[in-house]
Image (cartoon, rainbow, N blue to C red; front, side, top):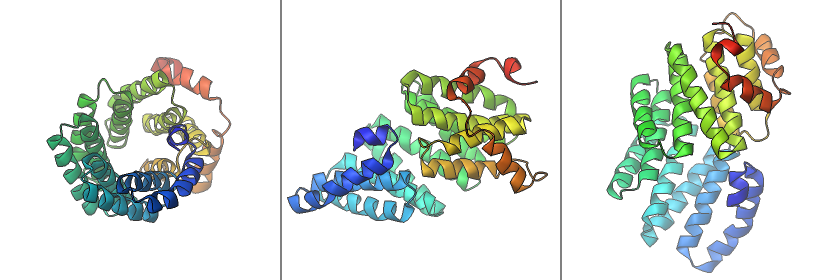
Length: 278
C-alpha cells in the first residue's frame, strides 16, 4: 500500500488497506490498527473523500492516544487538520495544526515540524491571510533546505502566494526551484503538480493561454491527486480571468491535455526569455 501511495496509485493503495483493516481490527493490536486507519485517512484524502478522512483520522488519533504512540498521534493530527481544511473548517484546522506544531517541537521532530509549518501556510492562505501564509511557508522552506519534498512543496506554495498577490517577479524562481527538486527525486506525481502551478505563475506573468495549458496538462494527468487538482483549480479561480468565459478557459486548459511532459520540463527549466516574451 505504501509503495502504491508513493507512486500515486491511491485507489490501489486504499484497496489493500481495506483488506488489512478488518484483520487489524480483529488482531487486538491497537498500534497496528492505528496505522491502518491513518493509511485509510491518507488515501481517502488523495481520492477526494474528506468526510472519510475525518472519521479515519479521529479513530487513528484515538488508537494513538490509547497506546501512547506519539508519532502516530502527530500524523493523525496532521490528517485531521487536512480533513478540516477540505471541509472548509479553517479555524479548526489552524487549531489542530498549531497543536501539531507544538507537539512536534516538543518531540524535536523536525519532519513533522515542517509538515505543520507547511500546512499552517496553506490554511492561512485559504483563510485569506496571505502574510501569515507566506511567513509560515518561509519558515518551512528555511528548515527544509536539505529535505527535497518539503522544500519543493514550500517553493510551490511561495510561488503561488507571490503570483496571486501581485509579487509576480518572485514567483518564477520559486517554481523553477520546485521543479528542479521534483526532477532530482524523480517523483512523477510531484512533477505533474509543479507543472500545474507553473501554469498559475505563467498566467500571472501574462501568458494566459500557455499557463492554462499547463494547468490543463496537470489536471488531465492520472498521477495528479484529486485533492491537489481541486486546489489547483481553486487557484485558477483567483487569477484575473474575468474577461474570459468559462468555455474559453476550459478550451485553453484542454489544449494542454496531450502536451509532452519532457518537453514542458525542458521549457520550464530554460531561461525565461527563451520560453516567453518578457
